[in-house]
Image 1 (cartoon, rainbow over the protein chains, first blue to last red):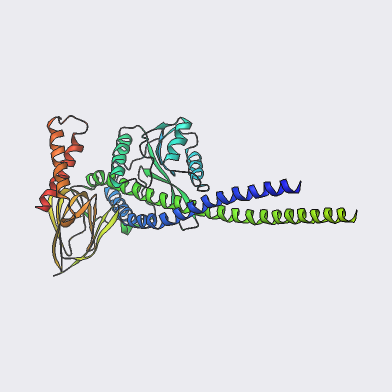
Image 2: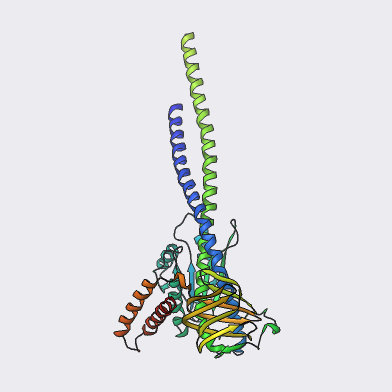
Length: 283
Length: 132
């Protein structure tokens, strides 16, 4: 009996060890990817920030809200841009994004522009109307792809296919913490904290603030989308690194426990054998 | 010469940040030149040549549209793409130009993608003009 339990423990140690090898390899891959993706994320920030300021200034200069990108209308349908991962095994990374979408959507009907394989799979399964399913690869999402997507989105918004555009992605706060962000892109909200003095009426818009806004809006959205995708990818890699790190640690602890059990079983078997031999010699 | 602060950004990186004496870009209403202490100003840009003059001299670039904002002697150029003269791939631009011209030949202005292909052609032409 002791022999068979020793064998099964040994088998379990082996299987946990090979799992640990996989999780450790994934952790290393994620760590090496992390640096590059963080750099890309940092490089995408200046454009997103500067263009946001410029767009807000232009909206304030318009005065009224006649520009379609600014004027809100009753929401009959929303469009979500959902940026999730390409693979699983990243803790709650994908699930958190989907949860946030479901919570935000409530009862309002919606369509989705999924980015990342997991998002495409998820919303295909749910049978939600999808705008496009070509972007399964978040890491490889290029600037020009963002411009193409935004062209589709602004067209849909302007011709009334949907009344609100919402971006859901995971914001990279730090290595240890990534937060899901739900951001309304269209109609653009006028920042309430803009003080009256920052409403710079002195700025000369050529030809008009309205036209400048109509032309610059797609660029701003594309920059925002690109920057969000960079953020999301860095978050995904960080989440995977953390998940794999704790999995590797767990596996190590399991192996330690199993080794202890194995040694006890071995010791038990030896003691039993000696007892049997001694008992045999006495007879 | 008097200088102003210039920032040039594209969605994927910061191209330039520093002092400049003169900036020339193509706005929707025509080419424009920004010098130090320009009035507060903003406009949308279309594809064209751009030039930046700093203390080191003048550099040319191809800019394919975006937005320009001037505020308090601080100039921000948000470009869709912005390539310095020496970064331009002339062969690629020429190929893009030929492809776009061919496509445009078989299209009418009523076509849905007409504006798109036309914009491609304009970007290619801006690159070729900057390089030559």
